[in-house]
Image 1: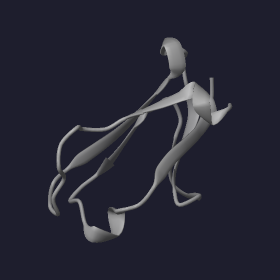
Image 2: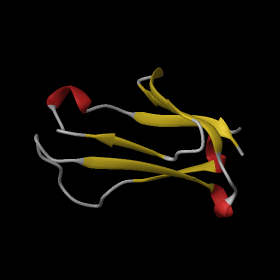
Image 3: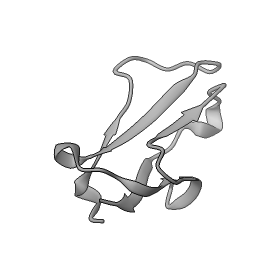
Image 4: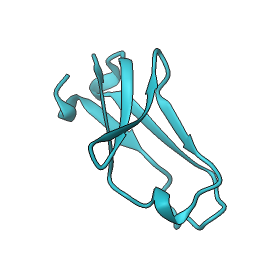
Length: 73
């Protein structure tokens, strides 16, 4: 699906090493998302079938990056 059909939700707070952070993607205007793949710097870091969250725990320096996702809406 076009990347602008997916919405990334993250906590609006400072994150520190050792924290747990959950990246949550949803479809724009609540469209159902399937076959979701999470990417960091264009490399897949997790694929989910029916799931919409990627949990990073414990948060470490190497997790710092640009994240996006691909999926079907």
